[in-house]
Image (cartoon, rainbow, N blue to C red; front, side, top):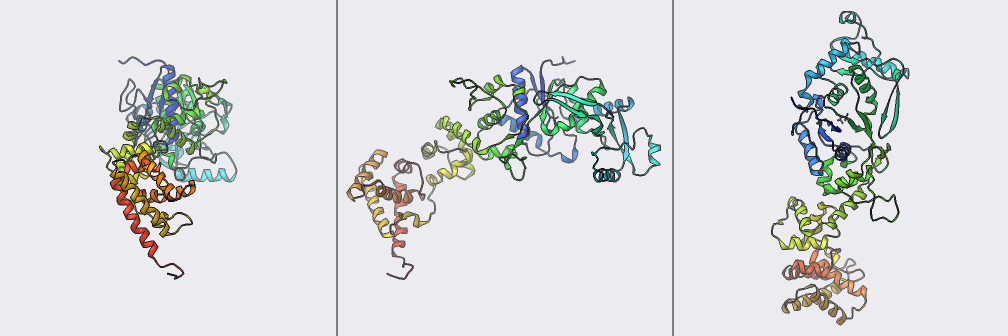
Length: 513
Ligand code: GLU
């Protein structure tokens, strides 16, 4: 027999119902931090007893999301462990046995009420402004007794019998002392008519059998906790510490909705070019205080930190119960900080899947690295790279009128462009297609045509910029031209020239020649 594992044991108990919610990731981060800090064990248990909501592949997505973030765990269905199986659908006989034991001891009872009857009952309670709870029509009845009454169905469920009076209290490490009046609590279903346990029965049985010491979950599960405590009591087990992490909120301090906040889905961060270390750091900022050793005053939090550092300082009690606003702009800023700090090689490597996806060939392309270098400081998400770099890869269509400086005419722009072409050709002839070579020649040229002010120089450079890139805003002009190379630049200047000739010769709108 396997030795029981001792020490702190935490678990993430996700239901494989599709996408991985950002709230679940926050719980996973808390679990992982508690386990790391205490030298404990982090277990993943798959709560797949709701067959209607089961989605193929969802379990793998959970592992992949945590792995992407760098959150590690020790026991799970795919890794095994001393308490296997870790999928609830593979543990069904266990739950049925405990449900029978609860019935025998009078802590649970069968209920044969039809869905229609329960519906009617609820409507009646709503109309009378009573708290919604089962009215115990079946309590104390045999099936034969119950059959004689209306609203009977042979498909029975098992309900937990809550206490009629008194209060249920417990201390949540995040929220402090919590108290619930028993008379208001519902006799929840433990076993469904299909023989599957509900969340409430399975979670208690498994947390106990798997030696979980800290059951940490989202705030939305708080109303279920009194029923769980009642089960621990009825089964004669000591409950673990039960903690409820705060809700994540949108910028308006409202609930996150899957429809309106695509980032509710963990996958969104990956697709949108966020770095896992930035996402983890950001979530860490919401729940952990990591002191800044560089700060001169005490109590100053460090902004950038990794999991190891966070875990050292982690304390469940300091998370606080109030909802945490997810500020995507702030996360983006943080992401940009991580991008700036990485080497060009690393950035090139990590941005390349985004470029490939957009159809750019980035293998062994020196232009890619050189172009990326120019954008390194500006990029906040990896997904911005294709858009930022596209003009290095191909000639792009643009509105020819953007070649004309404000207040100038097409003819004037054409003159500026012709001058620029000569400057470029001279640089090529001199074998000096370099940033300093171009800069010197263009400045000298500006001087020679009397463009001595910054504004006029800006007009000249603007024409060259738009002509060689198709854009009005780019990284520094001469650096950009060097990365593009003389051949590409001269070809594009010739195309731009064609545009300007056409514009200069086009009949004016007022019909004048
Ligand atoms: N299966 C629940 C969920 O999907 C687990 C809640 C808990 O951790 O107790 O979040």
